[in-house]
Image (cartoon, rainbow, N blue to C red):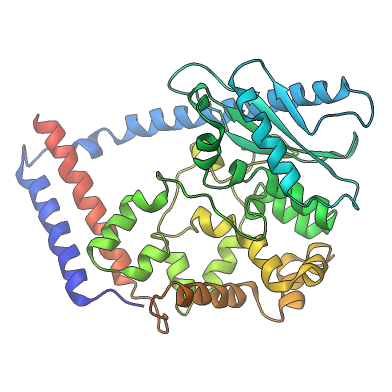
Length: 386
């Protein structure tokens, strides 16, 4: 899967032009603005990141305490399936939450009850740091064994229920996903559970059958994709700018396997709380669009497995006592990377795109990096001259 020579040439010309402008404008002997301010910017960014992560821990921990206190206040077996926390706009979503729970098939054979909690969010604008819109409180070692999908409702969501729910990329931000897997398949094996915890259960956000809610402000507007559209790289658009996903589509399936099995940064959430696809931005964890997997890939992994394996084979993987890689090999008969590449290629064919048969043309990725650097330096010099 390669970018044409003409496209790479265009990238190189634009990059060189941007760099040339940045050198010609202003004092040649003075470092560009971004270089001179690098230490100060790094210190400010580090402080901002620390504040966001501390706020995330405090806010999600406080939400769990409020929900636990509310659950304890009900008689045994009388806890409502939808908890309302606050007297503001959260009530606007109560009927929609009840319909969602009624429409889903949640097995109760494993002793995991599922509920939803709707919390009134901050009323100030912009939203303060640490507000995670959707997350999951997993069943603890003690208590009623309940799994709670939490939705923080902001005042801007005071419109119709249909519009509010429809703006989500996943139903309820993926918060119901972990609860569905626990209720349907029970407790995962120790190595599987450790893997899920290390990734804050992001691979469990989607519930089979996979059904995403259209979002007008989706990831299609990200700069990497726009650049790829400019150079005509259709499969690059399908991969959402991820060189890892492109490599997996080509001849490097081990890239996707390594990305799926790698843990996310530690300590972003209190133990027992699972995040969703917005966790990393809320924690100010920088995204690496070139070498990481896009959220659409990670959030759908388990749902894709259930659809392809069937419930019985997936349950064997889910409850296996082996490592994740070994359990997957037994269940699928091939490695996670090889299986995932086959799934991706099937989706590519169904989308009517050309089937990638060869290796990724990696100089295209280098061209994108050079282009990004040139544009950044040029923009910085423009601000400096003004």
